[in-house]
Image (tube, one colour):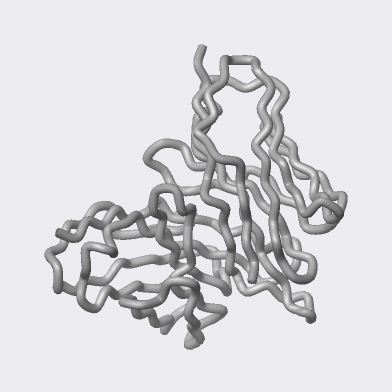
Length: 114
Length: 117
């Protein structure tokens, strides 16, 4: 199993550009999530999904869109990049159910917006 | 709402020293509690977890006990190694009344640990 994969690893955008961060998992996990990591703030939840066709907002959703058309894929779209979106982005997935809910993280995408 | 508070870092220790990283939480119901570790340039890896009060999670010499009465989940290791240098995150996963989680972790701010030879 490849686990959770993310592309690209690094990206530089200009303010106002749009892009999609890709995330895929091959573990047949029901839940998938996107987090951003900023210094001194831990990880904060952007959006999450409990299954194909179902998404919801997390703590910091503004400026981001998601969709989940398949169990495996959960892309994160930046509509109009802003310098405040400079961060490291992590995708994660997990099973549903008590005692099985530890999340598996991808390697991250480091995004810089100039 | 849910929240996790970790002791402020960074923490610098000599090899073979005792490690404690404090973590307290606020949550409704009975969340699962986790410690994740992030090595330089990598994603997060699960270090250990506990799903109910008085459970002890352990892995690679690290331990943490789920203390409901003090809402704490402190991480300990008796003898740290240089290879333990990393960022450590405490996190919780809430459950609703029906016992369902939604894959939503709330993280503490992270504690940077540096171990010198």
